[in-house]
Image 1 (cartoon, rainbow, N blue to C red):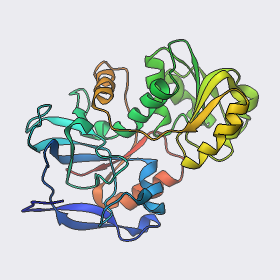
Image 2 (image 1 turned 135 degrees about the vertical axis):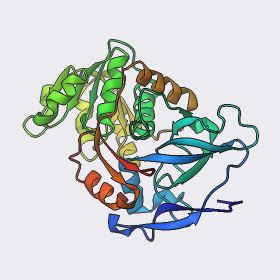
Image 3 (image 1 turned 180 degrees about the vertical axis):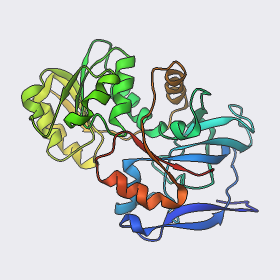
Image 4 (image 1 turned 45 degrees about the vertical axis):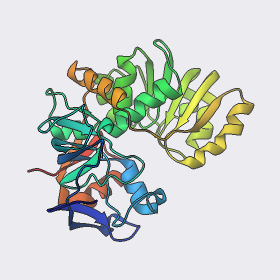
Amino acid sequence: MSRTTQTMRAMIVGSWGGPELLQEVELPRPAPEPGEILVRVHAAGVNATDWKQRASGGLGLWNDPPAVGWDVSGTVEAVGMGVTLFREGDQVAGMPRFPHQAGAYAEYVTGPARHFAHKPPEIGHVEAAALPLVSLTAWQALFQTAHLKPGQRVLIHAAAGGFGHIAVQIAKAHGLHVTGTARSEKHPFLRKLGADDLVDYTATDFTAAVRDVDAVLDTVGGDYGLRSLTVLRPGGRLVSLASPADDDLKPHAAALGFRAGFMLVEPDHATLTAIMDLVAAGRLRPEIETVLPLAQAAEAHRLGETGRTTGKIVLRVVE
């Protein structure tokens, strides 16, 4: 962060560990470098990767001080040299710099212009901030990694969660047959989103209820990956979104005629714009579990770490 004349509120972690280590501080307000924009943040989305990296050390990619978060929605405050996509006053949403530090839990954030897209007027900043990371992950997993086509079948684990409920909607918007795992009390919610088949994982082993899917999206990890291989059709794909350690499944999958591996989402202006077009068309909406003020980021992480939320948690930065 350079060339600043003002400060801003931001949430950092003093050291790696639990949510109680999140603290509000004053930091220099950043300025956009060439090709970047400065965004005044109205809302910041909270994602599982936020608390996983807070606890484990940020993949060694975070700066000092370690500032948390990626998903933002806000107003373009300034544009750097050479930027043509946006101008001051534009409403935007994005996932800048991932997996490198963005510091989205703050009043201002900078990032490459092409890591953002215009926010559609059909939704507010809270909803827009809930979308970038999970929607880009879902799109890239479904269509750029698993290469699914209309009519094919996908199993989405934890389908009612922050990622899962977005993946269900994007899959259905593209003509896929969707099976999801979720507790029974969340089934009505998922049916409203268009899920075709649902499995209560607390009562039924999904490996006994699901067969011959073309792809599995796994955000759970652990033994879910290995078990998920048994429900794939020949040539099917397991896309792990839980841990790089799941790349260990590759030889097991290959021996069975499947493909498997860990996928890391990437910022992508074109895909994020296509996602916002789905929003504008009324075919994609995030479910908001709760909205908390920026100062309560620790509580947001505690809530997310329960693994029992339906939809997304969002921090409101501008009251």
